[in-house]
Length: 423
Image 1: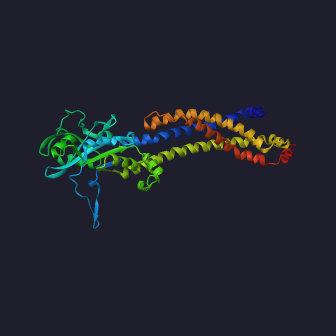
Image 2 (image 1 turned 60 degrees about the vertical axis):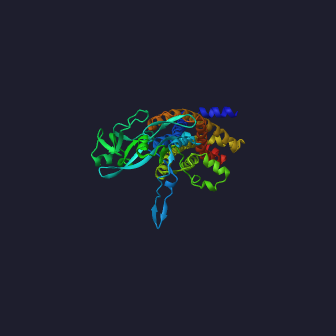
Image 3 (image 1 turned 90 degrees about the horizontal axis):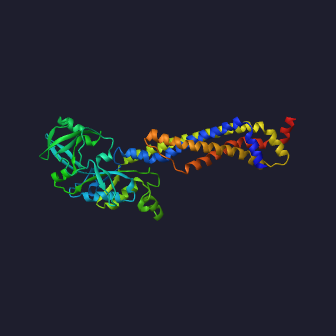
């Protein structure tokens, strides 16, 4: 009897039912597309931001301990302090090793060119770094800063026989020395050829870059580096991430340690490199969190707006349906049907519409999610498998929520007054 009533009810006003199902399907499709992209956007945006540079800087401990004396900030000289170059791969042995996208060790020195002191930096330009577990990954400035452009050509230091007499000049330095790609200059008394002119808008514009091994030889600091830039995929910091880990209890510490916060990754790097101190580049890390939160918030807002629109459509359809069938409801009440039974009968009808609309919308939304990921981020992502049943359940709940108020008003009417009106 119950199923027959629901089936007969659904066959009435098919256009109106189709409109309700279509509204739920449209809202569900948009919600699925936005939620699917939102679940992927974190890693994808983070990876895009990681191509813009490092968010962690690792330096020797003594070089990381400035002292305030009389209100003046002093940085102690630490020429004897360094990070062993052989220890650099250990960074890829931390718990969150897969979140380390690239790293670039460097050695710093100064030399005189044209009567002025010029910073010279020995770097890895592009290397294959072998981690302690045997896996390989790209490392160096080019792996860490994929958006950098150069006039001329990059130095290829992936081959053991690569030229050692080439250098890269920052744009500002090259302009002040009136040099261009192919020009010759002396660094530390040895001849070099300018391979390219680099323009980054940062401190690199004022320095010369050479292969790390070359600067090690020229300065006599074999096997030493004094900074490592690290790019890591991180989770935006929240209130919990800002707690002092030294004051955390066991479970809190484990949760913090096993979450890819910028602070927890820095802590793990400090564990494997006890002679160094890893510090977040706060300006970069904070901006990443703001970007991710804004993108996710926008997508979540769009999804909620789509579902709210579907709920309003169901409300409108249900209000019209209840108005037309108020006499039927009054007869049912007069013959002894309880309000709970009537609500269940109409609720089953609405739930079926919500289920069908949600299923159609979720399946369509999966395809839209891939299109959004392809268009915005350049990849064809696939949302989690649990997203479809979740959206179907939410769509059914949204349809029931939209029908609740019109049905409650209809059940509150006096049956005698409605039947007398009909008579």
